[in-house]
Image 1 (tube, rainbow, N blue to C red):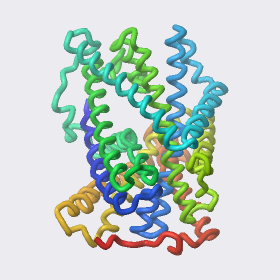
Image 2 (image 1 turned 180 degrees about the horizontal axis):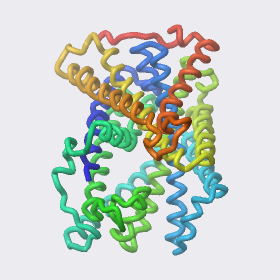
Image 3 (image 1 turned 90 degrees about the vertical axis):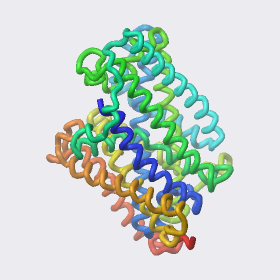
Image 4 (image 1 turned 60 degrees about the vertical axis):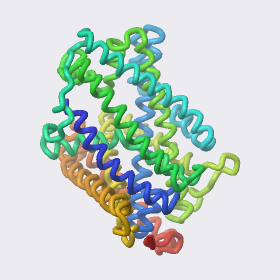
Length: 451
């Protein structure tokens, strides 16, 4: 019932951190984003971990996006051929895994072909998604108004009240998940060096993206709760059987014969997210290879398409390996990565927010604008996200956290989230021994904006 409140709570620190991203991008447009900026502000070690957090989170989420795309691909086919059994094929591993690999490889191929191919595909996919979601929202509200909805629930201001959402740990866990939902707007900033106006365009795009996302999420949430209520039976939003994919459950009752459009929209959403997300780690890995934070081969660019070649293939390969391993272990393990990803995202977004403050420390009080955009907003956003990171990490130690899976009595969410960050520490130490120039400040120096 308080999902709108949780979305707003998660949106606020995200929005505040966007201001920090915008300021840093204006001063230093670099595809390494968090990696480059945190290195310039705090030095190579924390900068490397910030970059690792971004790369790890985006690579891991690729597997989840591909999994959702496969689920809705078979759901769509079952609707087209009026055969419900086709939708169940997604649970057959020897079918699911190869199809997921094919979709991931296809996304990597489009990304490898450069920005122009990516742009054209994204415009069409996103336009269709917004149209379908708008149709769903309007159709749901019309049925609520006509009294023909499943469980008509009047909109209440209490839905938007964060004080009614539960205790701090509950809210922190929910916000961590909502941050995962908002996450991804920074992809437009990782492409800053390829933008027509790298100092301004990416920052504006990030701001517009996150505002558009929160509007769409809240509109859809209101439509779902108003139409179906929060009951635990039937079409209720509180029914566990519906929560895996609420749109799949409600599209038919809400949109009637046009429900297939929602399946196409979710499928296209997964595919567009899969392809767009492929851009982010490849650009960051490219920057890390360029500056010597990773082996030099990762800094290679395709002479034909002017895109990160080795970095793109590496990102796709890592995502495929992770998906296969997690899917073979347990489906719960795969879904626990979503919560773990929220943890990692809070980590590197928090670092970026604080990096803005420290890098611009000499000009924080130069004007009212710099006070708000370089100090107050990034400070509140960055600290909030780091607090959520710590709180969620502590809570996720509980084996009952998330899906309830555990490793030696420790919650799987903690093992995945903190384990991935710990792996980064190990790789960083190895890299510092093999290629020390970056870690000695020779390729990317720590500095400060002179104002």
